[in-house]
Image (cartoon, rainbow, N blue to C red):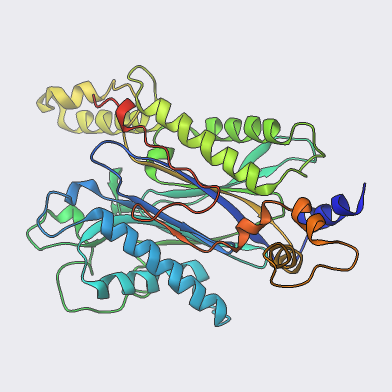
Length: 393
């Protein structure tokens, strides 16, 4: 192993006290959709699914609403990280999401969106979730084993007794809008900053320990409603194997792995969403819901509800996926990035060309851009426009 390979290995395979995310995102929007937004950085990422049901309400814009929340959360996370946030009461992600919502409300925008956000500090991944966008963590079992799911975030619902297709939402809508889009603090009312306490009924807070090499997958419900967990794990394993083929185990560029995984998951979810003869997670849940309701209503149950009890097909929806490989360590990565960008001189034993060849993709880790429907993707990002292929059934 030459000096460049040793340096790359030391960056990607040590077990540091500080971990970073190496993320990549992919989006496919349905016709008349495009309401999903997201952001990602080396220490946080979030996905926000604007609720299309309020798009017809005068003054409501789910696209602008979810995008603004993404930008406010990104800004809040940077501020909290720079300030050295420490709290024994609330997780970092919950505080970031609360501050993001406060910034959103002060903007005066109206709309509704779900939200999931995670932040990394040390070896902890803090997760805050409002609604049915989710995040899962996959870990490789041994050096050559498969990735398996070790954590799945908990979704929250508007009606605790009815969890089907009724997620909790961050909302600000006129009072005349049906109650399912309201929360206990979201109606048109004098502004009051959101806090973790005020969001307790809507938001789940969790923490999971992560390691170098773990894969974090975050997505809107368009991803999770069309792919079962075992399908996600299988896609991660096959994509990781294909991406790292011919290299030392786990030594492939983390950016390449993240890009390949997010790309494969979004494309697979899209293919499932347009099929009408499969059993998807959404139709499985719809069947169970319909059967419960039919059992309650008996002979008075409407025909449509009875038909739902045997529903098939995927769920056409906006599909957003952010996949990230957990990497370390911060000083080594920052050094490589800064050398590549010419901010500092490289070490004596490694010239600029060696630095560039050693970690050609890690310059991407310096990107802290918010990625929303209104911005152009940064370097090495792709957004697939397949609206001309989408079939609305």
